Image 1 (cartoon, rainbow, N blue to C red):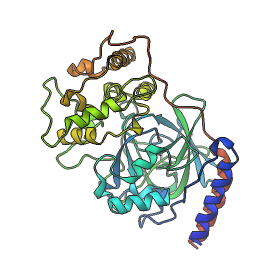
Image 2 (image 1 turned 180 degrees about the vertical axis):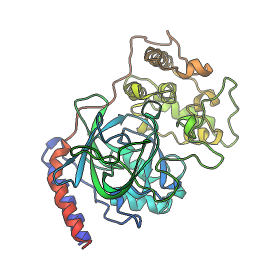
Image 3 (image 1 turned 45 degrees about the vertical axis):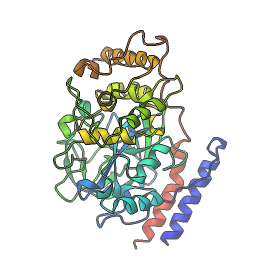
Amino acid sequence: MKIATSFVFMLLFMFVFSVSSSRAQVFDFVPNDIMTTPYGPAWADILLEPTNFVPCKGGPIALCYYSGPEPEKCELVGDGTFANCECFEISYGKYFVDINAILNKDVYLATVDACGSDGSGCQQTNSAPVCASINAGTFFPGTDMISTFSYVCVPEEGIGQTDCEQSLYAGCMTAPCTRTGEDGIVDCLCPTYDGPFQVGLNSQSCMLEDDMVWSAAYNPNATGTTPVAPPGGCIPDAPESLGGCPLISEDIPEPPPNIDCGEVCDEYSSCVGSQGIELGYTCDATLCTSQCNDRDLVGEACSGLQDCSITEIVKLETEVGCSCCASQICGCDASPMTETAIYDVNKRQRDRGITPQCDINGTLCGERNGGNSSCSLAPAGSGPAFPLYLLIPGLIVVRRLWNKTKR
C-alpha cells in the first residue's frame, strides 16, 4: 500500500506541474513515507539529538520557524491535512535541515546513506546530499525554494521554546514554497501532524484562533529544536550569541597549513554574477552582519553563489572558527568592479542602521572608485512559481491514502 501511495502521489504532482508549459520538466520526486523516528513520519519534524541537524550553505530557502499567528500566519486548508504558511524568504546563507524531516524519499535515503541515520557523519557544511539538492533546486521540482531552519531573523524575531500538549501543528521542514506578490514573503505548503510539539518562542499560546496552527517541531529529549554548536567549536555564519563563530579581529590570523589559499582565492574569483561582480566578496561583506530587514540586500549580494564551489572557503572558516573571513585570511584581491560593489553594499547596510563588517574590523570595505560606481547588483529572485494551492486537492487524497496504511 505504501508503494501504491507513493506512486499516486508522484502521478498527482506530475499532473499538476505538467499543466503549465513553463513547468514542463522531468519530475523526480517520491514522497518520503518512511517512519523516520519512533515518534512520527518525516512530516512530524522530529528531532532526537543535535546531530540530526545537518548544516548547509546556499539558498534560496524559506524560514517558517516563526509562522503561526499574524503576521506570518499558518492557516489550515481543505480538511486540515495541510497548512498554507507565510514564511520569510532567505536568499542565501547558512541553514540547517533536520535529517528526520526530509520529505523527498530519494534524497532522504541518499542523505542517511552518506551521513548515518542521526546525521553525525555530515556535520561539515554542505557535506550532506540534501544540501546539494536544495541548492540546485531539484529537491521539489516546480517550486521556488524549500523550507529549512536559519538563524538570520533571531536578532529581530527572537528564539525560545514553548512545550505544547498533543494537537495539530504544521511540519514545515523541507516543505515546498513559492514566491508571492509580497517582497520577502513566500507561501509554503506544510503537511500537518497531530502530536505533542514545541513552538520556537517563549511563553506562547499553544492553541491559535480560527484555522491557524503553529509551524513547529518536536523533541522528546532535552536537546531542543534548534541547532547547537559542536563541543568546543562554533558555527560559521551563525550569531555569536547562539554558538556562532565571530568575525575576525583587526589582527588577521595566518591561514592553517592544511588550507590551500590559492584554491580559496580561485573560489572567490571564479564565482562571478551577471554584472561581472565576484559574489563571494559582496556576500561576505553583508551576510555575517545581516539582519531580518536586509534580506533583500543579502539576496542581491549573494544570489548565484549557491551554484559555485566554496569547499575550501568553508573548510578554512571551520578550521579557524570565524565567519565571512576566508578572503581576508588568504589575502585574496577582489576586482575593481567588485571593490565598488562592496563599498555600495556597506553603504546600504549603514543606511538601514546595520553596522557592516568594514566598520567592525576594517576588512571588506571596498573602494568608492574601484570600478564603475553606477553598476549595481542584480536583484535576487524571480516571479512566483506555479501556485501551491492547486496542489492541495491531490495532496489531501494522498494523505488519506497514507492514513489507511496505519489502520
